[in-house]
Image (cartoon, rainbow, N blue to C red; front, side, top):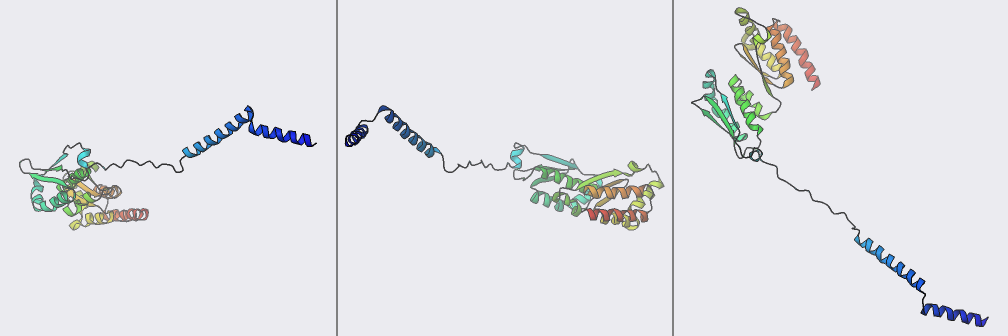
Length: 248
C-alpha cells in the first residue's frame, strides 16, 4: 500500500511539472475567453451619447421673400380724399410704427402705396395693412377698421341691394330707409347685437366682422330689403344672437 501511495504522489508531481498538451490547450482557451469577455465589457459604453440637434434661427420676412420688396396700392375714391387727409396720421401711425410697413400717398395717381421693409416682422402684415386702408376707403371709421390689424378673424363682406332684390325708384329708396331706420336706429341695433360694423353707401352695403357674425347681420339686412318689418327682424335677431351666445 505504501508503494502504491508513493507511486501516485510521484505521478501527480510529474504531471504538475510536465503538463500534457491537452491540459495546456484547455487552459489557454479559458484564459483567452476571459480576456475577450473583459475586452467586450470595456467596449460597451456605460451611458448613451446624446446627439445635439442643430439650432437654426428663424428666417426674417426679408429673407423669406429673397430680399424682394412686396408692394400694395389702394386707390382712393374722390369722396374719400378729404376724410383721408383728416385721418392720415391715425392711419399712418399704426402701419409705420407697429406693423413696420412703409406707406405714402401718391397725389398724382391718387393711390395709397405700401411696401415692406427690412425690419418687417411678418410678410402678412402688408396684406393686413392693405385691408385696413381698403376698409377705410369703403367708409368705416379708423377706430373700427384698425381692428383688422390686431385680429386675424375679421373680414369685410360687400354686396348690393340689387343682388337680393331688383328694386327701382321709390321702392329702392324705401328699402334703403328700412335698412338704416329712423336716425340709424335699425342699423345700430343690428351692429350692436351681431358685433359687426355696417356701412350703407347708396345701394352698396359693407359689413365688417367675423364670419359667423357677418352671416347673421347679412340675413337680417336681406330680410329688411325683402320687405320684412323691423319688429319681426328684431325678434329673429334676438333669438339668433341668444343661440350664438350659448355656443360661445
